[in-house]
Amino acid sequence: MNIKNILFPTDFSSTSVSALPWVYSLTEKYGAQVHFFHVVEKLGQSGFGYVPAPTLSSWKDQIFESAEKTFERFCHEQMDQCPNFIKAMKIGNPVEEIIAYANDNDIDLIVIPSRARKGMDRLLMGSVAEKLVRSSSVPVLVVNPG
Image (cartoon, rainbow, N blue to C red; front, side, top):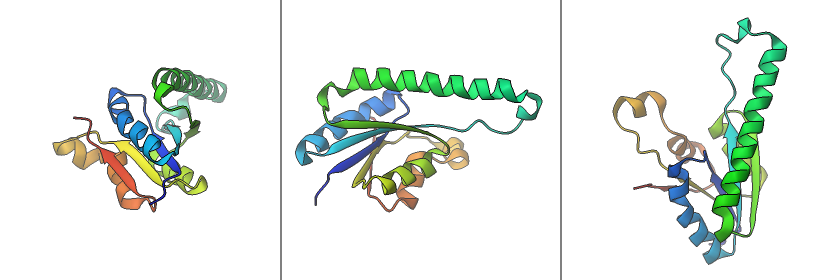
């Protein structure tokens, strides 16, 4: 097995941070490059018909700028153990964007934490990790944060 590129989708949560030791270990073992990836979900269309277009555009810009700053801070705080990394950010559906990025960037492995959802929350919402496992052509390592 030859792993050169590892994709680590992050939402900057403590759950994401708990999966980083796996990323660091795999990076060291295989000499791989890590792609830190964040997806800003699109704003829903419901209710935005009442918001003037310039205001909505400004909100979207502010959300993206805020996410960029958070991403910079996350990488600065967490990347001391991982000198060989790329960071990228997209706007869209997280599962679709993660799969597209993996396919476009020769990713060999996706490492993602599980959310450990239970009951109705899991049934109604599903999870990004579960959807990736089901639909990605790239192998997915799901890390239990516990």
